[in-house]
Image 1 (cartoon, rainbow, N blue to C red):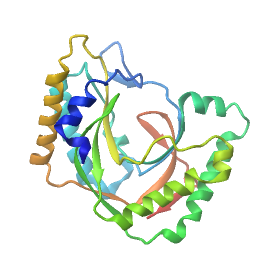
Image 2 (image 1 turned 120 degrees about the vertical axis):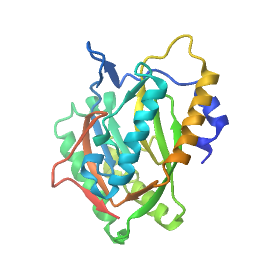
Image 3 (image 1 turned 45 degrees about the vertical axis):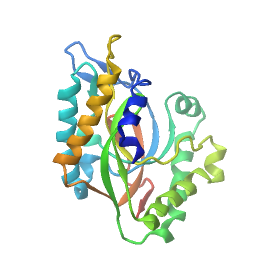
Length: 249
């Protein structure tokens, strides 16, 4: 909840940077750049029929952010790729280096699947309910952050993460935890930042956008039903084969 306070926005805007994950095409459209890797996420928006309502709200909110910040500053991601990350695995340079080892992708896939399988006794058939609590500003991205009031359900996610990050077979091939779990859904990245950017005014704008979410989007429930092992080639494309590892909450 601290992430949505005015003082947090005021602090965060001092550190925002242009993201290399999107670049402008000759016709002015934002296109994702190559950024390959693997992750464990909820099904992306286009495949998550159980969260259609909140994803529709997030698309409208994303449009509002784009309208407010302008097309130069804000590079929106395709709504069909909206998701919540359960566990980042490996990406960009680290992945490209690891992939030079023959069979790395297969080993990673099988070992993550084993971690997810070991968690099956933890499955209850009950989805985990989160609430979208407002706007979140990161160094290179803009997101909405989520919170749950069900401590037992939240602990199931943390146990799933521990099963992945503490798996010796995954540690052996270079997978390690690099971030704490901060539930969020990314809406877009920072594009061009003017050298004359008024950061104090921008922090006020973010607070106003946050209040707009609270006022205009009362349907803010997000349900986590499933975690899936997925490959990404960029920040707009998350793919998987039917036999890749999953975990049903």
